[in-house]
Length: 227
Length: 249
Image (cartoon, rainbow over all chains, first blue to last red; front, top):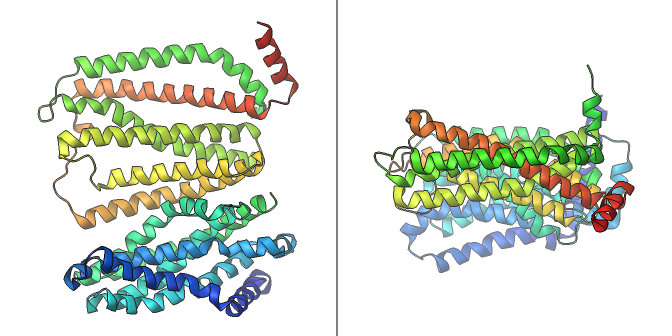
């Protein structure tokens, strides 16, 4: 039973990780975007570290969200193009499990590097020292939510030629709770409050997303990929 | 239980012919109730002690906001019925409901902004309810955009239905989190008088307007669905006969 339940999850996780490793240039895109946009903020806003410190947490979260969004349409697009998505759809496995594997791989490829790079950006945007650990925790949990929710949008738009822009439109409203609690986690820490409650709310969202998003994405893929 | 009425709903033709008889009555009811409510609310309801006459925009703003939110659930339920019972008609209802809901959300936002200027001193403030309405508008626009993106009617309907359902799961989460986000920032300057504390003389016309908006919504939804039926069934015999009769007369 457990074997059947897991069927496809680890295989697809491993496959996507290997593919990403072989195409390292593509995988580095969101991370580079994340780092480069952060140089725009002092240029556009102010180089004063006191004022930067006020907006640093929120800006890092906004940029992480945008970087994830940019990489989202690639989740199923390549597999749709070369036909392996169709193979997946006609395979006897439970469809949500391989999809959960793909979404997890997406987090390892984008969310995790973004999380690990965020202290560097925090340093450049003079984020106060109390904010670093909460930012790492909230980004680690939050970007996983983003990968899962975005996967549903990617599944809905996989067969469209200009799916990328539409995908952002569909997914952006669904991302709003994540960014609210994500930046609140850092904000609470900077105000000297207990920052675990908003982080726990993010964790609850992650739990709900793990349970529901692969199901929704599976339903969407069955409909959209044949058209 | 007798399910005949439910199975009949599966036929767009039956719906088209039945609603033909309802339409005049709905037009009449919507027109009467809305004009009674508007006249009562705009001319006869007492002035507000603090806001003067500017509060009267409530008679448009509140019903529009009600229907904007209820409309999303109507749209998502129609989509769910389509996915579960494979009912063509409910997809057409879903497609018709999306622009109506988006328009009502837009009306609610615009009237809110107009009302906000004299009351709060600004057209736009990042208040929890305003922000949630804006997100609701984005959700509606997403469903509309997704449906237009697909060439195949079938794929457009089903994809739209899934997105509407995903949105339904998210709406309570979005509302709660925006509410929470707002209390976190605590801008203490804005206070709205809540509806139950209203004077009955002001409240009664509001109830009439809400009823009027519900009937108007039903009317708009039926008219929208009927035109969608004609568009999707244009190759069937009965629509061709209908068109031929129209040309003859």
